Amino acid sequence: MASQAELVKKLRELTGAGVMDCKAAVEASPGDLQKAVEFLRKKGLADAAKKAHRTVREGLVGAYIHPGGKIGVLVEMDCETDFVARTDGFQQLLKDLTMQVAAANPTYVSREDVPGEVLEKEREIYRQQMADQKKPPQVLDKIVEGKLEKFFAEQCLLEQPFIKDAAGKTRVKDLVAQVSAQTGERVVVHRFSRFQVGEGG
Image (cartoon, rainbow, N blue to C red; front, side, top):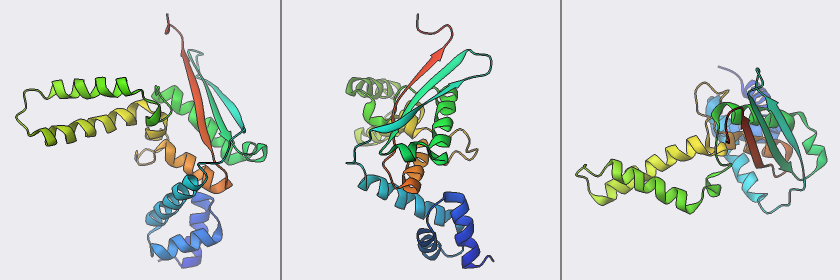
C-alpha cells in the first residue's frame, strides 16, 4: 500500500491542491485516493461558495473551430484578476469548455438560467407521458423531478458530464470548482455561443 507521503504527492499531481489540503484529504479517507479527490472537490465547492460574492472583472474569451469548419464556439470565462486568467489551469479549462460546447451542444450555462416557463413546459410534457400510469401524485412528482435532473444534465453546460471523462462522473461544474480552488479566485462561466453551418435560418 502506498505511504501517506506518496498519496499526498499523487493527490497534488491529480488536483493541484496545496500540500496541507492534500494531507487533510488523505487523513480523512485512509488509503482511498478516489475518496480523497472527492474530499478536495467538496472542499473546493465550499471554497467556491465562499467566493460567490466577489466581483469578476477579468477573464478571457476562448474560441474553437471544429475540424471541417462547420461548428464554431465562443466561451467567455471570468475571474477576479488578469494574473489568474493567464494561468495554465484557467486557459486549459477554457479550452475544454469550448470543446464541450461544440460536442455536447448545451442551451444554457446553468440550471438557474433556464426560464421558469421552459421548466413548466417540461414538467407538463413529463406528466402527460405518464398520464396512463396509476401512481400516487407524490410518486409522479418524484419521477418528474428526476426527469428534470436529466434535462439539466443535457441542456445546462455546468451540469453536463465532462466529455473527456469516460466514466461520466465528472461534471463541468466540478472542473470550474477545481480551478477556483486551485487559483483561490472566483471563476465563472459567463456565456457561450455555438455556431453551426445551416442552423439559425
